[in-house]
Image (tube, rainbow, N blue to C red; front, side, top):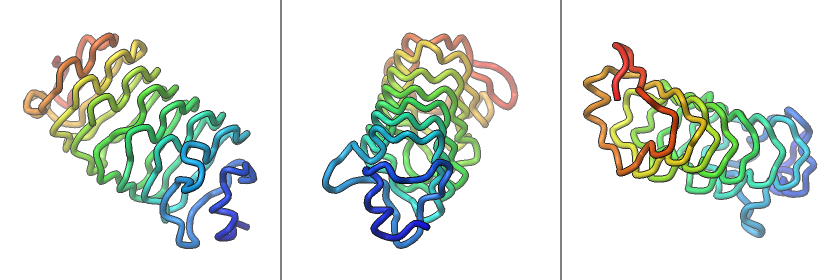
Length: 193
């Protein structure tokens, strides 16, 4: 059973594997006393965050061995560095994401599916230097920042859940896909670049 003090002491590595975290007024994953060490050294395989969690703090997953993270709630804050150093391969957002996509640079993430989410932008350097291979982005995206996927040498598939004409209307920053394996972007009505 999670108690309010238990939720506040996550950095002590006592959360059971596959336990849902959330509730008790807890809305943010962060540590006021030790930023960046929430799950550092945690020996968890997977963790699921309940609907009450809406914010993810910077460096929350750095140095952890967690392989899978699930968020049931609607995420409203996803800062730069939220998943920096994340060595897991899967992050799944069951709820909505109403903020810009950010925070996956230098992570071991392999796959992300954002189709159906409310996010409208992917920030500059959001996935830079990550090992992402496949990304699925929603039709509501209006901007992709500079170097958003730069140096993601494993990125070989990008699906945009809109039409080719919509893809060409997205504002794309300089070198948004520099040093990737992308040769095209898959849209609902075909491939483009």
